[in-house]
Length: 237
Image (cartoon, rainbow, N blue to C red):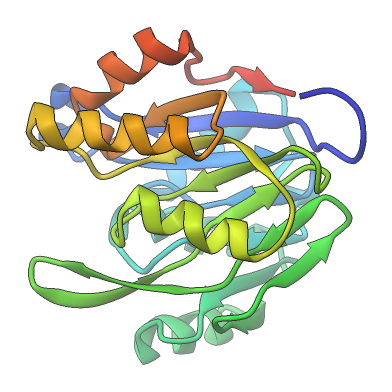
């Protein structure tokens, strides 16, 4: 994905194995450029160690996008906000009141994103929050679009509304989405469901798909089909 305004993506942390799940080392966190963080993994120590391991500076972060309110995406946020007082946190407008209150109490700026797109900077857009369900309860989630309008990359946290819905919302923000990465919430899903998602990706014109975090065994099939094997610490540009 070369040319235009495309921020380099770095995978800081990706909890995706059965061992990590049992140990509670779960979640996802990625950098877009040097100043945008997407999700904050499950804990502060792990997140800050990931910055150090990847030779990245957490004090440079100015924008923190939290996909949704689950612990494995917010856990590292609080330690980060203790040392970085200049970052702005972007939450879904329908996030729990307690999460909003805690962000404000930490002294961070807070932006609540509704259903319409929010432009963070050139080449970085939040398509808007999407309603989904988890364990029969309503949950709202948002993603991050990176790149020029001609070929955008969609970064997802868990895709609780479904990866298809995440793509549809991104497409509605304008431009052509050519790639998708992150959690697709296919853990424990049937082969038929996984194949349906892959077929949808193909029909939507996706040429790059990198399943992470909660994508489960569907990740193996997707990586084989889309020929992507990126791991923690990898750069995507």
